[in-house]
Image 1: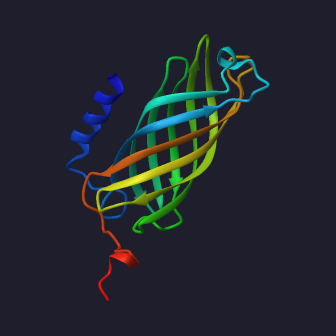
Image 2 (image 1 turned 180 degrees about the horizontal axis):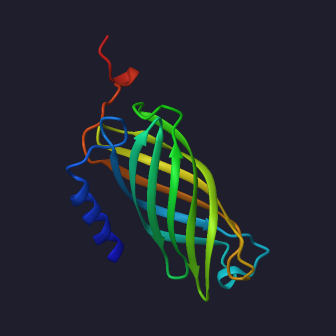
Length: 177
């Protein structure tokens, strides 16, 4: 519930800003994530897949396809607070925006806290000038020697909202010829 309040606070604070391109800089989102832990590790009481909801994030575009992203995801046995840099190959204004991501996380599992180095990729598919679907795959490399947390994969899916309308390129099937 606390994360939902933070999401709406970010939405209200950022409403005067723009979103995800040189003209529109801010995007907020909500979704879910799944940590795919190695089956050979005795992590999290033997759980191999750990589901987190909600995942709340805010992203700010800066320049030349670079954006900063902050997110938080929580479940009963896994909390992660992430910060990352995204590079979208200069496709910020397109309807389909693939990107690569590099960052770090603070991951908290029972009796363990660890910093991870993250690398991954994802894409946003804009459904309209305000709403899009976002998916991302991240490898979280943990240097922790704890048996509770090892390096693992993290998958997320969510809905994002542009705080200001973005330019929307009409699709072929939307055009009247």
